[in-house]
Image (cartoon, rainbow, N blue to C red; front, side, top):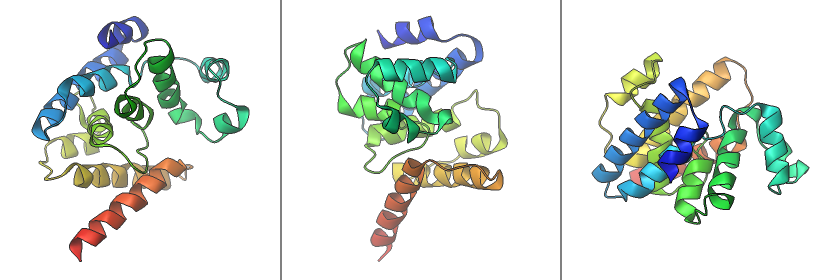
Length: 188
């Protein structure tokens, strides 16, 4: 069902990216003892609305019940995660909170990320069709924990955004703070 939905909504490079994300998510899920099928479901659906225009995304989110205030709290570049999760829930009947969170938070991360969400977040950044230098560099590393991988990737994303003087989504900051605090507590 998830694969079919991705193939109906995505074309070209975006579909290839999604397939790469699925492959990486399944690999990481197995490595870290997680459900590879759930990882594949979330990875197939994470970008199903990315090709929609911002106007289409906004209209659909409002139709699906997101208030204007709630919509205003999301940066345009990451709205597709929320919309994709809503479509997965309402149109595909997916009710697993871990899968929905993984779809929703795949771009920014979030506080309270499940391990499944971390797997999809990591996979979205390092899967084999990603050609930017940092992706290739990070793809080749072996991370002892999912938290360490998320911290490393999130640091790269934040550096990129800050260098470009871009607005940083609050969920990325909350994710960063939570994971860094957890890492500090483990060090002491």
